[in-house]
Amino acid sequence: MKLSLNGDLIDAEAARIAPDDRGFTLGDGLFETIAIKKAVPKRLPAHLARLREGAAVLGIPVPYTDAKIAELAASVISANAVSQGALRMTLTRGPSARGIAPPEAPTPTFMITSGPLPLDDSLALMIATGTRRDEGSPLARVKSLGYLGNVLARKEAVAAGADDAVLLNTQGRVAETTVANIFCLIAGGLVTPPVSEGALPGVMRAEVIRLAHAEERPITVAELEQSSEIFVTNALGIRPVVRMNGRDVGDGAPGLITQLLAVRL
Image 1 (cartoon, helix red, strand yellow):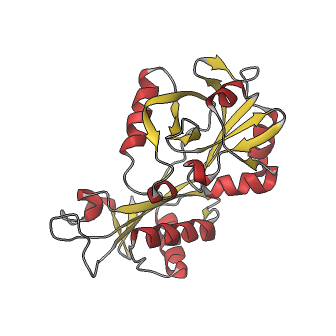
Image 2: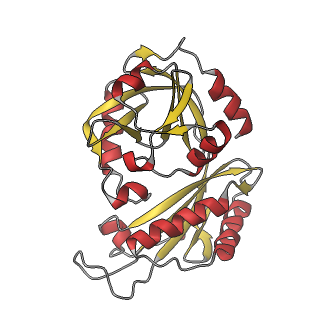
């Protein structure tokens, strides 16, 4: 497999990250995951805009122009002959001396890799009990490398026989799942938590809001559990939720809105 590391296309086996890279030692960085369809990265401008917004929050310079990043992404797709798959772009602050304080003049690390798409089958969700999403943190709006809270919530879900976990915010309302935004059909209307509730500003989320005229408003646990249809979205697609906390959602099959949106997205 080939990847792009700091602008060079190289074999994955030859790739080397500095042992003092802050992405490795401190999780000091962020990433973007992008779907590849027909050898083309989907919604690339929106992903690069979010990458730059997140980098600005963290104060990490993006070392390339959008045009150059698009060129590097195309080289990875071509070198690996990817028709359908996923790209991951990872940006870290780069190497530095020990300590928390960031270097005054960072040398960022930028890597692009490719891989297969995950299965798009139906999901059973549960509500995480040991992890909360801090909607007041600026990191709630950034795809940072610090995913340990999500990892713990996913472990809890798997241990309970579910596929993924719903993260509540500090107020006990619905934020998102460990890897996706969540949409619910409540009293005939499609609803999703706003970013202010701790939802990541997903690229696919924005597309669904536009296409389906979804309402952004807080969602309680009771509303989630009583929803007649639930689906989740991330950059790689849309997936129906058929069970929530051990109970069927609707009739236990993918909902009509989910199916209609999947065709358009």
